[in-house]
Amino acid sequence: MDATANNLITAAQTAWREAGALLVNYSFSAVGAIILLIVGYIAAGLAERWVYAGLGHVHHFDQTLRILLSKVLRYSILILVGITVLAQFGVQTASIITTLGAAGIAIGLALQGTLQNIAAGIMLLLLRPFTVGESITVGSISGTVQEIGLFATVLRTSDGLFLMAPNNQLWGSAVTNYSRNKTRLNDLAINVAYDDDVDLALKLLMELTNDNRILKEPAPTAFISELHNNGAAVTLRYWTQASDWWQTKLDLTKEAKARFGEKGFTAPLPQSNVRLVEKTPLAAPSRS
Image (cartoon, rainbow, N blue to C red; front, side, top):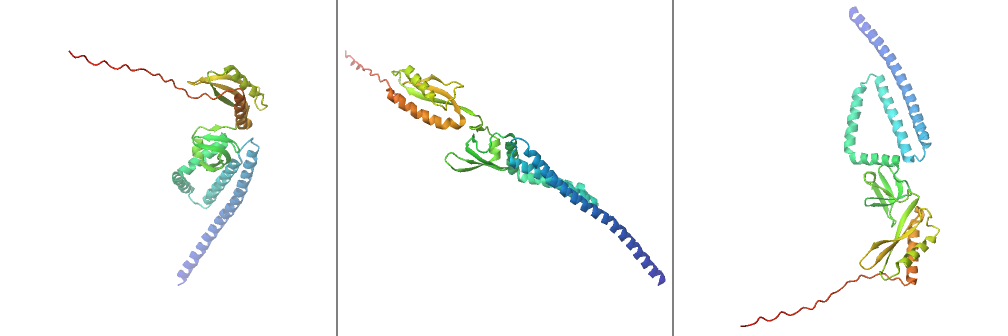
């Protein structure tokens, strides 16, 4: 009986010592993990603010991209801190990293189209082929840019409609930006008949260049651009500020119509020459 009691006491003491050792070890691990979490959380927040503020000093860097990059850095740091904390408690982090990698691949395959739009959105924000307020045409998509998001770009069409275009379509095609360059060329072409005074027509076109919106350099010029069956096309080529291009085109077209009408020019009408050929009747066959 005494031997059994001694064995139980010895076993209890051994268990108590081991439990105390484990408690001490895990206490240090827990304290270290808590300190690591606090430091990591603070470091992630500081890194986010530093990146956000630093990118703000980059000229024309997009606000959306600033937020995205700073958030990506923050959560990357937090994930690394979490893995390090698990390692403090003896967890095999290699399997966790492998699992996260496999999950990332699976999510990437499932969201392939969405990720393509995100990647295209990042490239649009970085390379800036267009910005908010500019008028663009990309394939069949046309309008004024209202917002550039990570997934899609919002445009306002010329007739006032709302248009949301996936970024992948905008990035994968040639972009025509009507607002990027400060100046823009226009050709004003008018058809005149061959009987009209072509020199007078060219003079009337050059008189239109007295408009203050037409730039002196490059200098405007008037010339015969095409010859048609029923007349010739005289063209005024001039440059304006991009913001004045549309209204200048409308005003000059109206003014040209009035001036050409005052001088007696008329729009050449399609003409056709008809040739009548008299048909000689065939002679009757002779009878012998």
